[in-house]
Image (cartoon, rainbow, N blue to C red; front, side):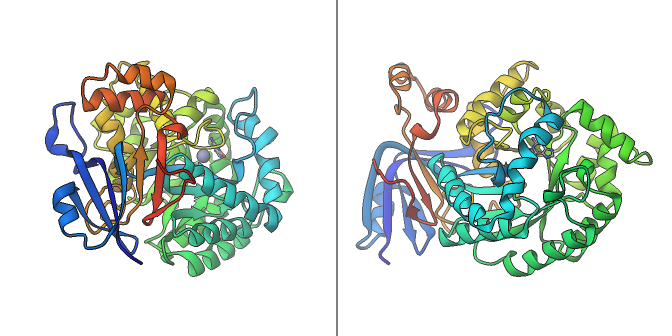
Length: 433
Ligand code: GUN
Ligand code: ZN
């Protein structure tokens, strides 16, 4: 296949910006280019310089749009695509009333396959090129998602949910089944192409102590797999967990005592935390994941970003579809900004865009592969149109700086602002602008 040269305004991060004036943290090039060969970025920088090295490349001119690394969503539920925006309840009622019945439908492999296609389309339509996904309890749902991602050469971290109590029978397994099915999926998918496996005990309430122990055994046997679960999202959830695990020091201890904490552990929500839990996260390198639209939708609470950062903890940020209400990482930043405003914390837009690209890649230990436009990384790229809607267009007439423009995109943008998404160098959206 011939090389592809993308031309546009180029923005990529080298580290987390400490503020608006931290120009060392990123590169911004007015007339930039990215050269793609065999799904990889082989050069990026000034258009003239990159073009000079690109013999016979097919050129796509995206000017005046911005080229940026594809967005990374570090917590999303694949079998919840059809229950986004389901009215009226907080976490535990929402799970029982909407989520569990919807996930039961994924016992049907045909349904799972159909939804996997829709799910991946939605991700790339919104500029997301890597996701960390919960599947349903059925191994076939993970098969469906990994196969779909493989067909698109899309980076996907996923796992079948493990759950052996406190849910309808149709989505329960035994602890041994959860272990065996996960083990077989790891053998088949982990490290195959762009797939990675996440060991996925759903949360303390839906796993017996025996299942969490077996999850810990799996993690011990496969230390390069990820681990994903939920932590301290809602007060009723925390109280119920305490009754199910009376000997645990706190909620996090339920996972910690089973060997489930480490730098590859992602803890969705992590809102209502005790000091000891924060210390344990810092000590083990586990990552909380901020899910702004979900936390607002379910009325769960306000994520203390600054408090966790002050303890040296690096958090991910994510949509948490389907309690989250938007697939857009831009809308996720929009609501995240407001949650931090409510606590008098500031999310500067440069830090925000770093977070959904390189920052989330760092959380996954993958900054050498995704999250930047650096040569040698995978060609997952978004093309952003800061004037995508009439409201953005009129606002942009007064944008005075890169930060100003990015903030407009962060607060007002969604899938309409994604002019194109490249996955491993291949455009995913039908209309190219
Ligand atoms: N806790 C356990 N399962 C879930 C889920 O599916 N969504 C959210 N938001 N929280 C959970
Ligand atoms: Zn979740």
